Length: 248
Image (cartoon, rainbow, N blue to C red; front, side):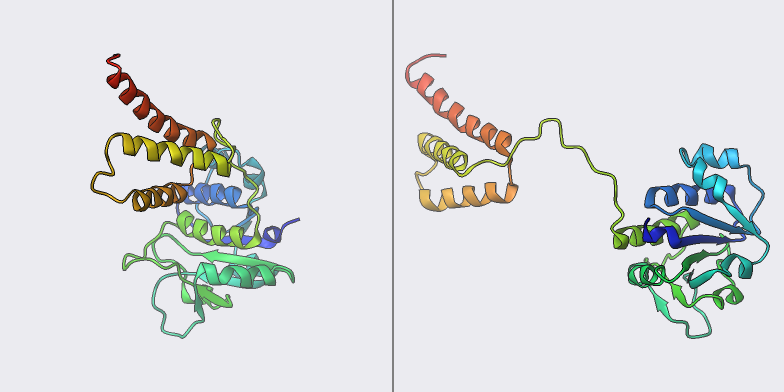
């Protein structure tokens, strides 16, 4: 069980099936599973799956309602999303601030994220049904696609719930961190190669090597990468030796 199981997404009078599909895809990515549509545009579930691949389980669970009140009837907290200035002073928050509050409320019952129409957003009477109004921080251009807005809200809830389950496989050339002796061997060879090309002629060797050490520490190479750097320094020394011996 997850706290996100108690989170419902409600779309009020959505006008474009593409936005339903986009919302379903977002919900699948972020671990939400309950989508409710209030007086939506007519749509073909097969087309929704065509846009949001691998979401049949969510599409089959979509529920439809004639009124917003009935869609929210079992919810203990409702967050109304919008960006327009309102005449009344609503408690306004951001998705990041909303997430922990709603996850706490989800322990008591179902919570809802409410989104309005593409062109006009939520009317005042819809916002009246919520406990808080959520505004997504943007530039002066505050118009977001519905699915984009759902993504921002769902992402913050997903992070706050600690529900990330996908792991990124290690790079195929992954190597362990270098040991201290590997560091010192590499730095020693770098020092010798710089001396061999007379790099220290007008420079302080101690200061230069301290900077090199700092640079490599900040780069954070793994054992394989540090070995490559060391090999470069060694090749400088070998090349100089071959030149001195007149060998190509």
